[in-house]
Length: 342
Image 1 (tube, one colour):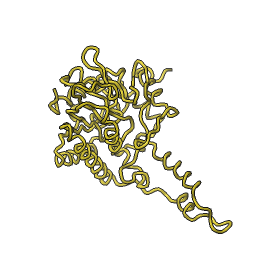
Image 2: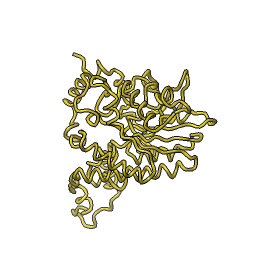
Image 3: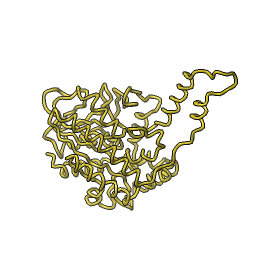
Image 4: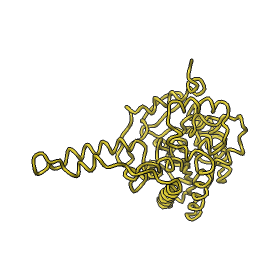
């Protein structure tokens, strides 16, 4: 019997290939970024790894291929902004904004899969030289900072944890071992190596502290966005991306089939169960709204808007974090309306 994921969302096989860990591009400062020059019926990237977005007619552009004449707008963020789940480049959020809901200027896909807010901003800092004048930057984000906040303090560091950071720190510890000075006396183990090898990771923070920490990180990096965008006069806005459980308690029929199947082979509820429902989502959104107000950054909590706009049987999610084509389309319309984009 075919898996529900293969039957209902065959495009996800292309994303699996695209995200092949053996093909990961390890990049200085960013840690990792998308495969460059990738081609398929579902997803296509330019020579830098940015996904193409589609506009009216045959219009198409990416951060690495856009003409330097007319102004553009950016959709930044992580995998949901990137468009995981969309059946083609034309169905992603920036494409739907450019094609239908805010078509007055091209929208470029400036998102990075599995990024936290520090990586999202760093991507812009490193590649803004590719761009013409930018008039709007919508940061569609927030979920990954909260999800990663459960990592040990040793992995969160000063700027928040990042996905796969456990592997990174393990490799760095092996490298440190290679460079350590041998013990001065034969048979005595280096105490620093012993303590590093045996130190237990710190406990997971209480949820209130994790929410506060995630808000602080998000606000810190939004302030950086504003500072770096100021030279072009770009308006920076923030949209809190939804999680399926933040939108509605009862999933659509197709979503239930997919979620049940995914739950059998993942530990989602063990890792993220304490943030996967509406109550923590509202607390997080309320605090983010206050932080954005202090920065003068327009804020949009998309989850309640999606709940109001979608019917109970509307299939919005291919998994708990990523949209179907319908989900992308409704979300793009709500973003354009909520932020006054044209």
